[in-house]
Length: 313
Length: 232
Image (cartoon, rainbow over the protein chains, first blue to last red):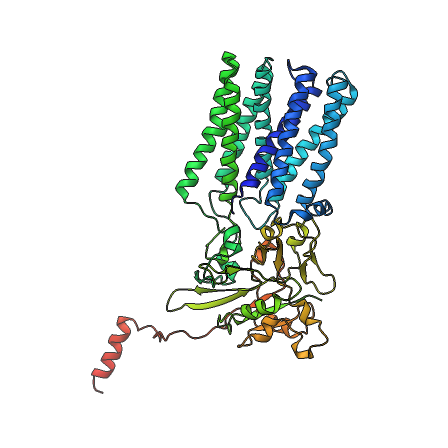
């Protein structure tokens, strides 16, 4: 699949934003983010909601005909993309209610209204990340996406990036980072394991073959002629292929940048209290997740490729 | 009614006439135009509803060229329709034809991702998704003589490899062809239940290979030799 920059940016940035909102709201309901208080929590939720908005705006950039985007709210019953649009629109009034609650009534521990909006914001943030991942996971045409590991990865990566962001915000605000930092370590570890399972799982082609595509199952089938003199939409959208060595290097980069380095930096933050480590952890993690999302598209093999000579998807 | 095509891979010669006729009719049809990008430039390409690809099946001398024209299969389980967030993609109740309402499409590409056959192509000029209409603007046109109320690709095929009809009616010409010739679907394991069927090549003798019975065992041959050599 063609790795479109707008969709990569959207899923990474909005994922981090929704993860930050979900974690902050959860900690707020469970007794408050340590050391942040209502003001600090407000800043964290605001940053999360802004990142999510930035990502959602980027997602409209890949529409070829954005003037009809408003129609995307009307197929909630069957379309995951429509569900995403609906939940995204529901999220903003809810998070606004939460922000107003934090501003006027104090944290969730102090005001029941803030707590209600906090729980709703957390649920909606998690639902949107799940729904986004289901847009991909529901496609039977792409075996590398059609897996429960995809929503698991999206949710864990979103929460891990949210936890690292929250650690960074806490550290910069001078709050104790013991709780959020430990949470970040746990989530980075879980996300890394889940991603490793995914990489292992897609390693072997297991989808449909050129034989069932062409309907000739008793002999070897190979493409003689694609019937075109230059690439079409189908080649541009689905035909993307990167050399195996590049994919291997990028997988390594994902592990180093998105999991190992942030993990080490957060351990450093917990041990030494040197605040400067936290922004580095965020930057490396987001850079790693951009590569991770690029790989998510670059390694996906759509069944259209079978008709252009690929033996198995 | 389940209108669709049955394509005979035995008689298709891969001449691309169906693709040309499709482009000619549909570029001024319901979902037209079928935009061309740099038609006289270095890399001419553009939107097509019907693409013809050729494959080699088997290994010489038991090999065969198979041509496979592909357009929308008008699937029974059309996931391109269910994934559409705007409701621009729809499958007609009355005849099963899958169409895209150009006034509602926002060009998100999700239906093209959901289609296993590559039947949907984004028109980069209009920003909307385009696809085979089964010539919905021909097959119901009462101004045309009845024998011409068929998709352009079917009418133009010089070898008569393309057949159009109702695949739900067991007595229709197309259903009979599918039954008699073991018509098959592309990628049946994905469960999209494509309505279009392909008729596989009929079994034919290939280049002659000497076969005959296996030569007899040594003892038998000795016996035969003795029988001839020893006079009675």
